[in-house]
Length: 238
Image (cartoon, rainbow, N blue to C red; front, side, top):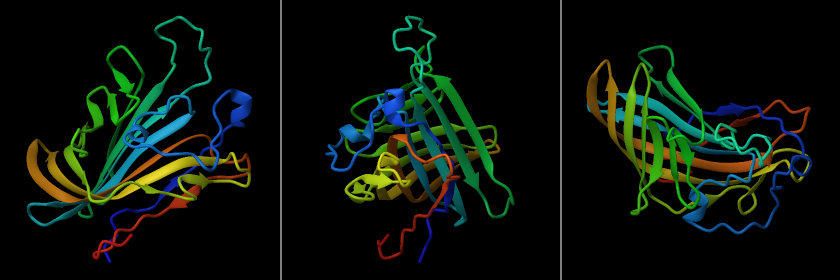
């Protein structure tokens, strides 16, 4: 058994969607691809979350995580200012090296517009300054991130169709039905690309997992978060 992903702890609390004007996540939604790969800006929060295992040319194992987030703040939609934050994008990337002893990481944040940041509707195309994740016409994803400690340029090739999580894509996170997300994954992605550290580029290969979620409400006020674990097995199981 080879664990590709480590667990992530999330803690999000939101007001009731109906009270804020955001759409409510409900069971029985229809998922259409590639449309769902793109942004859903009516919903409050959304992410493209890639986590995986890299192998260097020397045979060393490294972990990585790249996540792009999109949020729709509760601002006045009628505000005519170009500076009004109708969409906020932020991203985080990390590299784990067992020999190093600590996590390398970096982040970006910007409001949508001005050529700095955007999340396209209809297919994956999220740009945040010099970072991006995109889906190509052939179905492969590409992503590029650059931090002060490392840079990654990767191509992610799906080995299976999208997998709907929860009940046909409806993933309940709390006691109330609206405390849920729309959620699908692509658990098997073949990875190939380049890692740059200390100014030295090297080829890397590996495997990864893509999670996609969007929602307007996740947890009640008494909740503190949840733990998440994903495993890819040597025989292709998950």
